Image (cartoon, rainbow, N blue to C red; front, side, top):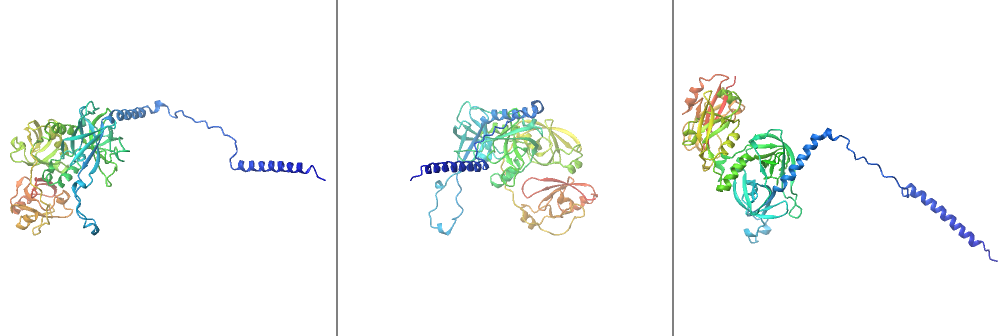
Length: 518
């Protein structure tokens, strides 16, 4: 006999176990957070936590930065400079010595990018000299992604300013401001177009913000570059280094871009950074736009800079110099040499004059005087205010035109040592020049008295004197030989300031003021 309830019992067992399994599964998934239970979305607060009125000045400043960036950026360009790759100095390995020498045209060009900015609707662009120097081709990239070949109008290594031009019309040009009106602490915006990352994804249009940290910084960067070139080495003293310092970030590729004030006017050309790595470390420097504009005008009109010339060698004034000359403040530029037949000599300027003003504008440092003269044109007349014999006087001078040809500077060799010492007063040794000394240091004539040794940490050493100078005057009295030095120094007492006028084998005389130890 067949039991008809057996299939029914089997089905009931199946349903029971399925229900248990389902409940067990729900328990596991609940523990794992996989249930279908939904959570309500959190309520997000989007209301300002500080009132607009409380931060309105900062908001206004932020809007100013945005407005400046939007207005100025279209006038900033990227400059691609192609240079011919230098020939290899030697074969890299013995394995390649039998390979044929690579032709110059077969070597890939070196490509570098810099920045610039449009200064006229017809395509004139200001940039740095070091961005375009030695380039075989120049290409300019605009904000709208158009590109144009550029021609070099002119460049000036003595100010690091260059002008290039593209054949385009109705370009958005930038307004030039007044760098003389800048104040330390003033907000500025630095804009560059470095173009890192290649042409497909260039890193373009970087905008950084900072303040004017200092004015009139003499970095000696241009002099160092000019000294590396035999053609410009002898004229390196004409380099004008009176930089604007800022804490706005300036990195390689931003060179040549504009530094603008909050009115959108260009006040400087971003040019250099102070860094041990080659990248930004807190200090950026720009060329004052007043100087750059004057250089640009000559480059456009003549293709070169017609440089006004006063005809002096000079050095800055410090506290001891000011005391020696009886100056009312520690400010001014000391004349150390008058160029024969130059404008200064013709109009009565003299060595030991201290220039304190040009056309009633105060002159406090050498770079300021250089820049003041550089903004004039040959033939201009200026009023030079000097301190002479502890009195102020004004001399009218007609500026000449500089020629930058001079003899190369001879590198000094080791000094010659012999008797007598003067460590008790100046802390240096002065003796008659010997033939050996003249040969070692590069003097053409074996005449006069020379500094052959300087006492370490002595009065003269602390003022920067070193062996290798011929002594021309002491306390404005001529020195023909070592006996003149002994005679003049015999009248000097402890605590007095002694003025030495000395000259190197080639180059310009210098003046040092040394206080005798008490």
